[in-house]
Each structure stands twice: as C-alpha cells, then as structure tokens.
Image (tube, rainbow, N blue to C red; front, side, top):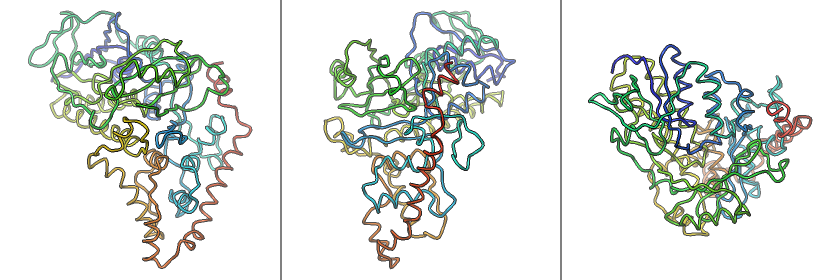
Amino acid sequence: MKSIKSFLVVGGGSAGWMTAATLKHEFPDKEVTLIESPNIATVGVGESTVGGIKAWTHYLGIDDKDFMKHTNGSYKLSIKFTDFYRKDDGGFHYPFGQPFVAENKALLNDWYYKKYFYPDTPRSDYADSHYPQMAMVNSGKLYYPDNEFDKFPFDFDKHTAYHFDATMFAIWLRDNYCIPRGVKHIKEDVKSIEQDENGIVSLNNTHTADMYIDCTGFKSLLLSQTLGTEFESYADMLPNNSAWATRKPYIEKEKEFVPYTNCTAIENGWVWNIPQWERIGTGYVYSDKFVDDDTALKQLQNHLGTDELEFKNIKMRVGIHKRLWVKNVAAIGLAAGFIEPLESNGLYSVHEFLFRLLRNLKRDIVTQWDRDNYTFQCKRLFRNFAEFVAMHYALSNRDDTEYWRANRDKEWEPNMIDLKAMFHVGFFTYACQRDYDYHYETAGGLQAIAAGMNWGPGDFTSAKWLDFYNNKNIENYKKEWDPFIKALDQRKQKWLDYLKDKDSYIDFHRKYIHN
C-alpha cells in the first residue's frame, strides 16, 4: 500500500466523527473526508462511557466544559450492578481507576480478611473501602481536586468518565472540532462502490481516498458487504442480542441525578439507567431466545412503571469480524464488532481501536504486517473485554427464570474458568506468605466485580487448610488482621468527613458545566 495522503470515513455518528477528529488531529496535513447518508439515523449507542475516554479527549485537547454543556453531559464515577448476584439482592459498584492501596503489607487483602472474619460485611463494601470516589457516590458529592491528595486520594481525570447524548456529541464534534480543522463533510447516500485487487477505488464513481474507514454500523458496508470479511459470533459467551431503548424525563431530579450508570438485572436480561443533565437514557438488553420482543417491551414498561414513552427496538450482532483491516479498508465501531453494553463499551472500543490504528499508520507506508497487527491487537483487547462482560453472568447465582438458569448452567470456556480461579490463587499465595508484599496483578475493576458477585478469594476451607500448615488458629489470624480491618473503616469515614463542605453532585454541574 502506497503512502497514505487521504482518508475517507464512511458513516457518521459517534464512531465516524471520533474517527475523523482523531485522524485530523494526528495528521493535520492529510486530507480527511467524512461521507454520511442524510437519511440513515445512527444507533445512538455510547451514552455511557468508561474512564479510558479521558485519554482520548486529552489527546485531542478537548476540554470537558466545551462539549459537556452542549451534549447533556454529566460526570460518571462508577457503574452500579443491581440484582446481578441474586434477585432482590441489592447492588455493588465498579468504580473507575485503580484502588487506593495503603502503604502496608495488607495491600488489598485487608478487605478479604474483613469479609472472612465478619461475614455480614456487605459485598458492596469492597468498593467503598478501596475507592475514594465511592465516598462521593455515597454522599452525593463532587469536586475538582486540590493539593490534599494525602487526605483524599482522588484523581479527577483517572477516576471519572461521562454520560452524554451520543447523537449530540457527534454533532458537536462535527461542528466544533472536525469541520473547523478542515475535515470535509459530504451528505450523500453511498449507492455504488468501485473496487479492484487493492481494495476500494471510489464511492459513487466520485469520492476517492488512499484509505477508507468503515464506520457504517452493524451493516459494515465496506468491510463485510463489499470485501466479504467473515464475522465471528460471540453468542456462545454473551447471551443478549436485542434491546429496547427510550428516554424519560426526571421526576425528582435532585434524587435521580446520580454519578453512576445503574444496570439492573431483571427477567431476561438487564435494564440500564443513564442520568444525563436534562433527561435519563434507559433501556432493556435481552436475549430473544428466551423472550419475544413484545413481551420484553412489556417487561421494560413494567420495570419503568410507564408505557407512555417512545421505545426503539435494536437488534445487536455480538462478536467481531475475522479481519479488521483488509486491503485499504479498516473498520471502527459497530462496523468492526460489538459487545453488549453492560460495561459501557460502545465508545470504548472506538477510541481504543483508533489508538491502535494510529500506531500502525504512523509508519506511513502500510504493509500486510500493519494490517495484521491492527487486527490482532484490537481482537485481543475486544476478547478480553468480552470475557470481562461474560464474567457478570458466569458469577451470577440467579435462578429465578429460564434465562438466568441457562447462564448458571452453561459450560464456560477454559479461559473463563481461569479468570475466575485467579482470585483464589492470589489470596492463597498471599496468605501463605504474609511476610511478603504480594500484590494482585488484577487490581482494579476485575476484583470489584468479583467481590460484588461473592467470588472472594478467601473461604473457610482455605483458612482451615492454612491453620494446619501455619500452626495458627482462626482467632490468631483475626487478631493479626483486625488493625488493618479497623483502618479500612477509619479511612472510609475520613473520606466522608473530608467531603462535608464540598458541592453536591448536582450543584457541581450547575456551577461548572451547565451554568
């Protein structure tokens, strides 16, 4: 492939305009064009994001205050999972960033010993104990950090993400970032695609480029329909393939405007709740193998307590294409692949795929190695994320419907079992060698989900086993760990006390974003 001097992004929406913005930022002297149909509405996925998007906005030099006020934006500190472990079991949080680890031998193990010695400890307490932003979630506060990290170890950029209207975000990127920087915008249906042995030659016999980026959503117009790239389904690992989506107004905004996305498990899937500034985005992700669309809609309406909203049905193809860069076409967003949005992965895959695309494009002259490397890196990331999402089902103990029993009883692939087993291994290793500063390699979100789903690395069996080898009884272990356990509770209270004079979550947005 010759030196790339021009790009043509096919398809708009969040994926298309994020792609155009990224390419123009990295290659300001190259020609970047985006063509989109004036008649095709975007799916509108991506209203909830995860922490990685901050790396992308900082890379492009986009200030939060510039776009959030135009996109119904709000800050997001975590994802709450309600009733995933068992029906009517309550919830737990997955906060962003790495957990705060005290400078002592306890590391993250202090909480697991707390749960072991004090079984009534709520599973949600893991996140509360190790993530300072949970003090803000629990007290309804938010503030820009000062220089008192020792008192409140909160990094605003690393510990926050966004809620926003994905359609409005795409429009803002188009009008305020891309076009002012020279991105050419064409509103036109793609009616013909010309190609040769090297890939795409032109669109509609008119529009040409050295490289084409497929951002055409689920239909994958270039990569799949034109170049015939095969699709690898993840249906055996991830159960859901359909969704009903809607928007609802606030009834009690002071209570409903919260700093997290709430995912609530119900009969045949789960319901999302995304609080943006002026309204709430909500919907139901489910499997049509267990419930038909009409019944699913009624289940969502029953959950929301209303049928007077406008509902949109979305069919999802869960998986990824076998190759993501073929000849002179690379795919981004839904055109590449899709994982159900349980962990807000829609825009995550967009900016993470873009970073990996840039790494290969910087070589300027593209070889097959670059294409294969892009495919490999993106698919490895995508697979890891899919397994992370599947973990929410694999660790569930719900058995109240056929849907949940099927997830409980399915045989998981060996790598999923490894994912689950590493927690036991880590805890066991540390408990046997307590004089060493053993640190979990999987610190972060994985452990927050595991603790919330009652997959703790410690149990009675291992304790009795260790008692035999270490000549210690359980009470001696308890005495040894009680100081660290008490320190956790003291630290939680310290964080809450620190926030007493800070702005409420809603007042923070009124003051700094939507003023």
